[in-house]
Length: 594
Ligand SMILES: Cc1ncc(C[n+]2csc(CCOP(=O)(O)OP(=O)(O)O)c2C)c(N)n1
Ligand SMILES: [Mg+2]
Image (cartoon, rainbow, N blue to C red):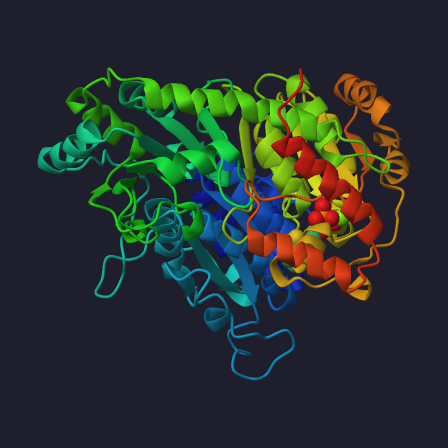
């Protein structure tokens, strides 16, 4: 047994059965071992190491288990970084395994020799080590996995290529300076002390207008969040990563918050006197109450994340579900339901506004309508992944989550590129569930198109082959264009943001998949039906209008001015843009006609 063989054996003993990666001679000794262990450990081949890291991150997000990615030394290791940062910043347990030059070469400016300990020092700040001798391997693996789980973070083990071929030492000799590690990790039961819960309950019981904001940390606390909101007569807003935490079919769920947020979330936060934040590090303070306006209570499993967005009155370190369970018996049911009624009215109106916005004519297709028509067609238990870009606004607002669905994106790093690799990992983790990736044309051209090749390679082994990729073909890096217009007041910089057209659906067909290019709004519904009836993965390419503004939930004077100055400076798109903005404003401020 070589060190490579033992590495794979130890990973399997930890329950790991899949590795996402890409080969190279820096990891030949590990690849050989994978080949020998193919009955126990599956190697998934990607197009680019960054995709392997995204997949490991998505694996963790969609299973709760550690995701593992593998890359060769030098360039392969460097390629992992962005995906690893995505995992680190969204607090996912991911272990990266990378090769390195042979021990004899290290320090010799050798070919492909990169100082990997330094390179990974930040992204794998919780644990990064290099195996210099076979005796270390057992504890390096045990610690990398355990620390990834315990700290919900990225860890990394570096293997010089000659070490991989050495004889394994499964059990280090029991002598001075050897380390004796073991397998296993169970999550703890973490709840605050009663006295602290009582302080929180006191505030929640005296508050009259309570707003809840839940994030990724509440994904497993659906029932407890609902019961707490019911008891407190509160509404529930959701940070982007918490989209699946509470179904959108509850009338008091105000939906997303922030620039991609909803008006009922905005109104609730502006008027609340008490904020209960659960498992979220939602960053934008301008969308939270003004300090002093509301008393704050925050629950987070990680004490480091407390009171950094709003100065909280009670900071509770605890698991969101268990903490809410412990808190619930201390809460009195609010008898005055007027706040809750107000929230529910706002929510009902907002859904009408969204429908109205989705049905505004555009040239040729209003992207919101694509999402609006997708929403009721989402199959039970489907899994959604979304990219960064304008799509994230419509994903956040227009898609109604139901119980049992999962959804994620790059929440904190907000990188482009994760939608398609996340979807691929979701299919490997849950081959019987329908997966829908949502991406812009920029993200597809950056890496999604290449990962369609990976889908083409593997889809036949999935029990339900349906993986649908929605591409918003607007020939623009539209999110950036709107940020320029709205935040900076500048016109669109065409040299930077114009994208070449590309036949996404045709390309899918060339890979043996299916697809459709939708060019007219009246064809959207039938195209979705076709996508969901498909017997292969499917690319739904929608020719969408880049001039439909991803408006913030409210329009401030500054933003309106910025719009105007953009137009005055001679934005090439000003005609379409003006027309669209006027329609949007009318839609928002005129009473809705049924
Ligand atoms: C790796 C990376 N590069 C750049 C950005 C900045 N950025 C955010 S959204 C966006 C445009 C995305 O364009 P596209 O995928 O076409 O989506 P659209 O906004 O047009 O719908 C850019 C460049 C980023 N978030 N990540
Ligand atoms: Mg685009």
